[in-house]
Image 1 (spheres, protein in one colour):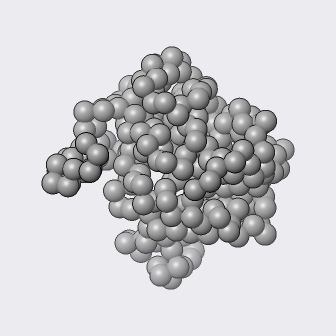
Image 2: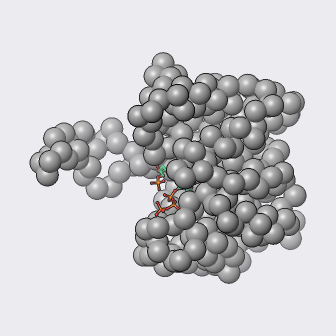
Amino acid sequence: MTVDTATRTVAVVLAGGVGARLGAGRPKQLLEVGGRPILAHAVAAFDGHPDVAEVLVVMAAGHVREAAALTAPFRKVTGVIEGGATRTASTAAALAALADRPDGTRVLFHDAARPFVDRAVIDRTLAALEDHDAVAVGVPASDTIVAVRDGLVADMPPRSTLVRFQTPQGFRLGTVRKAYELALADPELVATDDCGVVHRYLPDVPIRVVEGSEHNLKVTHPLDVALAEHIAEQIADQIAANPPENT
Ligand SMILES: Nc1ccn([C@@H]2O[C@H](COP(=O)(O)OP(=O)(O)OP(=O)(O)O)[C@@H](O)[C@H]2O)c(=O)n1
Ligand SMILES: C[C@](O)(CO)[C@H](O)COP(=O)(O)O
């Protein structure tokens, strides 16, 4: 892929959370799975992608130095900045750090808590960004998902229309920048992800959904650490069985 300044791809690895649901006593992205910190797995996926020019890490307050030391070996990491109190505030901090970049820049926001995003998922996200300004990654829902209000089922959308969002979520910088300008001016802003911000504040922007991967889990609860260890073992076995050609 030819890269000029306007279409350069920046990956933002969001590691500003404290991991309250996991309850490890420190941010979960610093815990090791498969012999490596979760944050390092996530950064490595983008650092090693040929179409990603730069990786920006947004880290939880009080852990920026640790994250800078941990990510120092990665050659594409150009900054480790402090995040905010919410995921949305951490994305806003990244956008502020990218304020001098052209609107056409491709930006991928990825949860540091998803250590096993693979090359194919990143490829699909970047390919869809060629003709969409906003791209999400999703996997089919395997449970029945319902909306509940006051303890009663309020809506049962057909499962065939539902996917579970993962990350990365990709955008043209100008689009996500505009959505966040509007969002940050809204005192009632509530969003669990960046596509949610674009969908709410720029409802006319189509958000393309591409296929994610069941390996791309978000380490959220204690059981997820065991699952992540299992996935790390599977990946190591696959690499041992089919070593990359140039190693
Ligand atoms: N203020 C925040 C909150 C979250 N995140 C990041 O967003 C991703 C998804 O968030 P989540 O799984 O909720 O992580 P935590 O906020 O750490 O977890 P918890 O809600 O259990 O505290 C994580 O990589 C997390 O580090 C962030 O950058 N800044
Ligand atoms: C962005 C996300 O991972 C998509 O599934 C999710 O919305 C993050 O939510 P969290 O509550 O911050 O874990």
